[in-house]
Amino acid sequence: MIKNTPFIITLLFVAIFFCSVNISAQNTSIQAIDSLSLKLNQEKNQEKKLAILNEIVATAFQSDLNLAKFYAKKGILRGEAYIFRKAYRGT
Image 1 (spheres, rainbow, N blue to C red):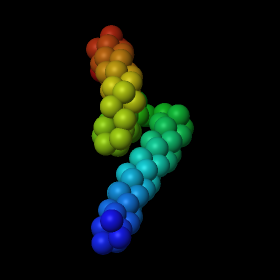
Image 2 (tube, rainbow, N blue to C red):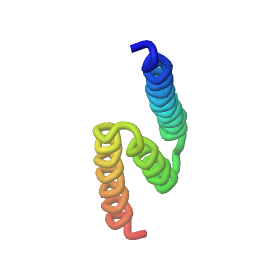
Image 3 (spheres, rainbow, N blue to C red):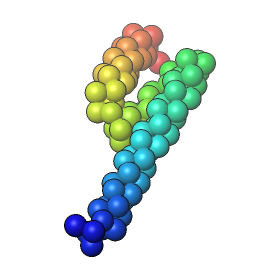
């Protein structure tokens, strides 16, 4: 049992390391999504808003698929509304 103790401790440290890397990656994604959301709310140009939504979906896809799906649906609705308004105006 004593001979296996260094192996078990090493395995424990490796497991903790990989868990902490995953957590920090998710925090980075959440921070990026938050900053892009603020940018989205401040943007006036509809085409730029769609591009920002695309960035949000790509970022959220790496950490939270439900959040990515939410923003993708939001982008689709905005895109359809934008196309409809553009066609209605004749421009």
